[in-house]
Image 1 (cartoon, rainbow, N blue to C red):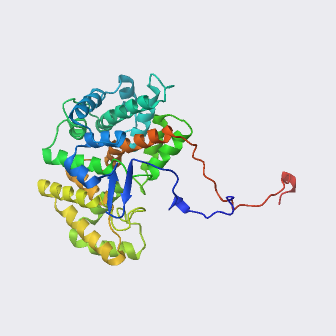
Image 2: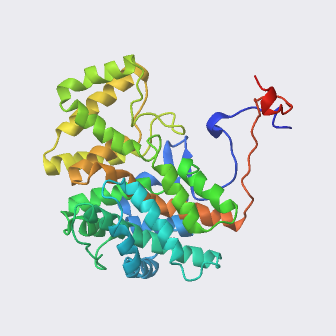
Image 3: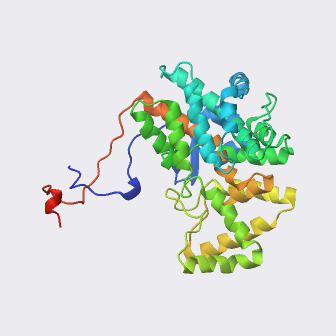
Length: 378
């Protein structure tokens, strides 16, 4: 069938372009699964490190595998002096996603074996990216405030080390656990916009760093990763629970886009929301900042009453990160910190049986025309 005769699927909605073994939203159990494991169970019972291994290898690690993987990841958290010097020169007003995108691209230039693209090498690079991205985030978090870089620690989990490199201290175990849960929930989600972007890029046999850099660029958009930032800005704008219902009614009446609601894949509610909401509630109880979830509850109830639309993962994660003390513009980089596992798994899956991703388009422009010299154009 020619492109002119084919059905148009705007945004590729409903189009199946390839197979994957990594994850799936299963409507029959209303759950997102990573290699068959429901993400709710993984978030409650496994560390983010265990889930990273699962996403890359297809099975949960045994004790020996986990210990070796953890040691390998922790040994690679450092950054070169050259990259640190470059990051010190980043504009302090830059968005952290721009800083992270540029830092990952620079990291690619430091690779000593750029010509090697075998699966073993790309897995090694994936572990290094997982290890270094939180360090990059911490470096920019501090540099933009005129503070000194804090070197990562090898005795902390990925979640704990994030707080260390950003703030110089590790919060209570309750906070670290809630953060770790969010990383598990954000780690992978099928052929979403940024993941598909990474696969498109490497399908041309470009390198893994280019794919990840492109993924970061895609994730930055407010219709994708940036939604969690927008959710918290919305809650701050509303300010008090007493204003929440009228705010939502006005937004719906004016047909404004309300961030944190709806999802292209989930039709009966995002299966990750209950778990994240549980840990956001724990943060509210731990910090005493209950009003943000009170506002969120009213917004959710009003949206459900008026439109029947459920919240997505970004809706509870935004206030959860706020109560952890993380700057709002760092919420989407946290998404990167988690999704690097899914992106790189998809990159390796794409390259294992690669075919250049090259869709068609339906042309709706002018028919053939003749060029008229400039002197004859009216």
